Image 1 (tube, rainbow, N blue to C red):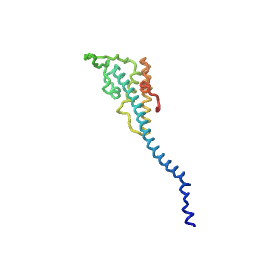
Image 2: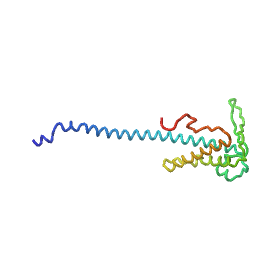
Image 3: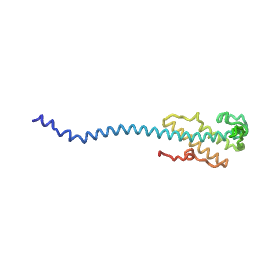
Image 4: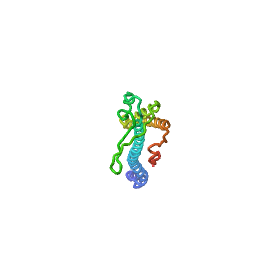
Length: 183
């Protein structure tokens, strides 16, 4: 009779709920890990894209301003180090091809060279968001450094826009109609 007591046919039925719970929990954990990694990667790529879009927008603005800046001394070591060859003395010019195929030379209006604060802010804004100096590493220090530099550059751009009397264009995410966070 003791053999009959250990092989109770209802033991499997009594443990059925717990067995299903364990199987479901294990399967849910595996699926959640996989889905979390996929979602985390897509959110990370979207946030990284938005950050670099904003830094590129700021870099472009600083580059245009640097090219419009009339330097008091073309051999200024400070400007050569920060803006390199992208800052000619005199008005910036470029060649644009019209729809008829004719090439026209466009001149951007020069910025006032008497304002040393404007010149300094343009140089600093340009240096803060220069793509070659921004880290693309995915660690806390590099991400914090990147965010700090972009935030400082945004402040410099606001100062420059106020000095020049330009309307602020907003961030790249505002220009493209994206709100912060995941949709």
